[in-house]
Image 1 (cartoon, rainbow, N blue to C red):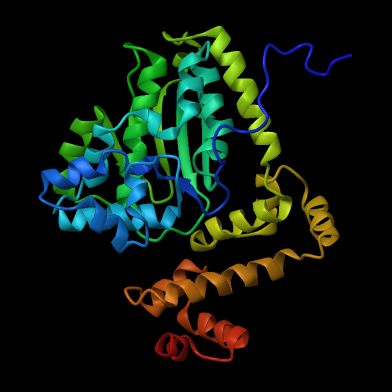
Image 2 (image 1 turned 180 degrees about the horizontal axis):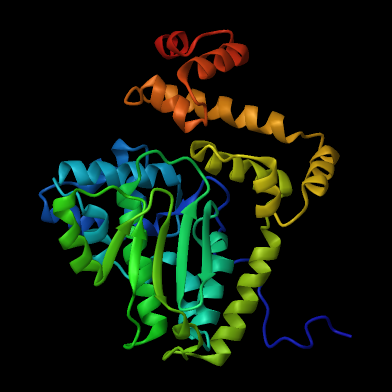
Length: 351
């Protein structure tokens, strides 16, 4: 039997190069050139300052580091003298920033199915280090997002994500969709809160480790106005094949979890096992099969992040220790000397 007999057409490979861990599509910069011009600035110089080629401004499929996106947005907030740059930038953009997963969400039969598409495929086609969750309560549901990497200060990137996620929910929820409230991990000035709430159209609350859009749980079963059964089936099948071909290994998933959880102080093998959908014993056994131990992986990621943070002279040693999950700078200093033979101060001086 012909293996393609049940298919109308087939593709030899993905239409675009799928990003891997530590990468994100440059679509996040869509419209930056126009905004920079409105402030009398050159976007080319802005992205080049952060180690990127100017083509990222016109090629949404090129790949950059999430840290470059976060740092660029924080820099723009400073030079444009706009503490809400990320919100204003996101309001100029379309949810298509997320790539073809947006088209799939728009074609889904219900809001629940559309959100499921975002959860399943945003890390596949746009940002592998991102994670989207749907939390359902009795009356309220929350679309929650986080980045499994230590990004340092990234308030503006979170603002942009809030606006784009809200726009996507409004697109698939239809005219009747109204957010109940939005939670942000950013730390806005009290004087900016009314403008933030006006731009997002609902009450905004601050939670240190949570970014989410809340809405009535009954909205999940609402039909999507732009539902398209054929597109949903074809594009969903394509993205599922891309996902299967680019699924990260267990080691990569554990490394991603460690990078994202160190700063919270809650990095543990129990939590990692929960995140990877297995028992602690199974996780330990599978890591052993790769000649890996969770504790050794934590040490390796801490050392790599420590070296990177020490190269950024804006960060104090106390801040670096905190980002690596150490209760105090002295503990960090002892660990760093064990890794490198140098104190953090000596390493920073020589590098």
